[in-house]
Length: 313
Image 1: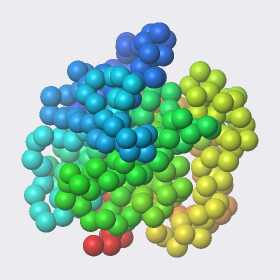
Image 2: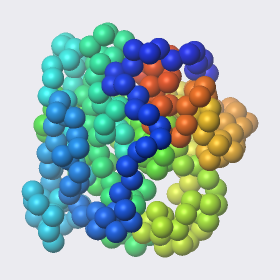
Image 3: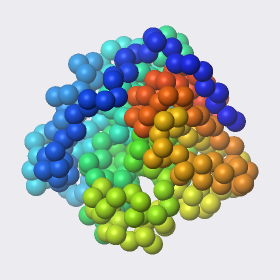
Image 4: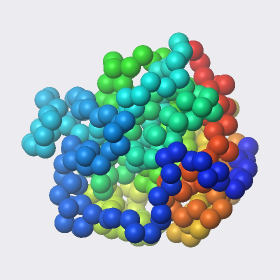
């Protein structure tokens, strides 16, 4: 299964921002945020996106507060305030977006309003800035367990859902793309519906990933990094995946030179293993999520309809 790309429509909502001139937080601010379990950047969210805290018993009793502190909770869940497509299964399908909290929710809700996207509840879960969406080497940052236990439980209690892995879909950008496939392959009994990446981090050498953004997770251990690599997890779940239980997709921008080699290795390996997957190289798109997703636009939505067709109600 291959997703074909066409020239992007100029009518993308929200509009794709200019690639250059972006603001990046200074290293000192990023380091402070890296130890906060509450995302303090909620002021920058669009007005139609709401957020709230949820309990994280995985981190211990009382891990829930509104302000950063010793017992602060985090990994905020976001959901649009605006009504979208109505129907008995509106909240049954759940698409969890990793590190794509601004453009992707608004993009997908707009597509649902237009009837181009299966109706579902969108939740964006934030990891720590230097987290990788998995349990770290010594268990002090159990991000994988928090998402697959605490966040899923909170969503089941808050929204109307069907509690079956086929209705749990994951998509992420960069480290979030790595996390989406990692979570889906490590916990197929929870996230078994669809796994999608936008310029996911799939390098095989830890040294190529950069020490600053990986040390808290891997502690410099290539062995731990390899044990949690997507291809290792995929090989362990190969028969399950080949039976067609999970939709798989890898998207990348045509101008994204930093991710191209790793993605080509992924595509070649999946093909050699006989795994059915979708892929797209979006012409003219750089590394950023909005350019990949917005550049693909409507051409990528069939992936979610295919996932819905496999859904168990």
